[in-house]
Length: 369
Ligand code: TRP
Image (tube, rainbow, N blue to C red):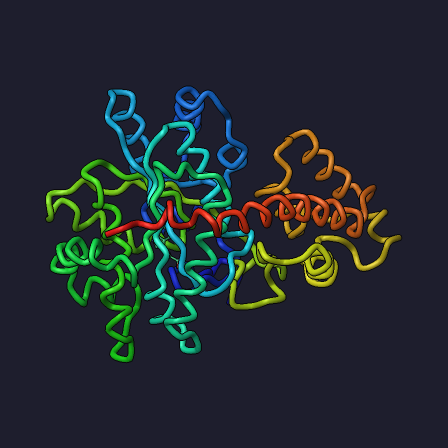
């Protein structure tokens, strides 16, 4: 695959993604400075994920904010396909969603698509994906969403709520629409073909506009949802997209929960985190120390640096110092990795505790239909 070729679909991400090109290809809007300032004005905060372009693109976010300023409420929705344990890349849109819930004091729906992952993955049973859904729910709850304003939807458990809405949606989508968007063929199973209508359903669960923070690979589903919304007399969902989080093995591919050694899971022990980062994290450093001191490293392709930028180091001046020191050769790859290992393990020790506590109150979050 040549350097300007890349693939971004809900089920397949490959190549080195050029996000400006992707905005053009998908027809989304870049988050402008003006929009950033507006978000800052309303929330009273400058969130590092916005400032650093981790959330880089949107559809109708300006409308959501305009309406909000006129007193019109919205709600939040995001989701996860439970194909395995949660990895740290998944937490990006969830942490951001939690921030939005706090700032706007709005309802949040979280969809766990155990059906989707069963349809999409040859080697997973439905019992397994449903079990992962419950495990992933713990990670979501652990981030501190307000129980009175948050509902978790598990597709196979909450079909009674979803099905009437999905039916409205499904009637307006024909096979050539989904085929064009997802590249389905005659071998594609029926579950996959119907699935978009289930991912659309939570958009219309309340009679308000919805804002969806999501990985940009999920945009195609909601492009379809936005097309059909007026046909069922509903408002189009608004979206805010985050970049794909690189796997440990480096740029060109998102973190995939199906590959153990490419990924840091929220359930990993401190020893496992240390081993994975030291052994697998793609480095922008030089092959030997002398050369590294002379030429310096490349933080822009270094996965450890990228994880600090995307998630773990919120302080811009500390991040800049790491960037400069690594680039000049003053900081070695091993030193950079040990900063990251410490940050991840500090985060996970708190997270894992909250995750266990969440087992006790998961029932307060599960949607009852
Ligand atoms: N299809 C998504 C995945 O594989 C899961 C999902 C369902 C989702 N609803 C969503 C993701 C809404 C983002 C927003 O992860």
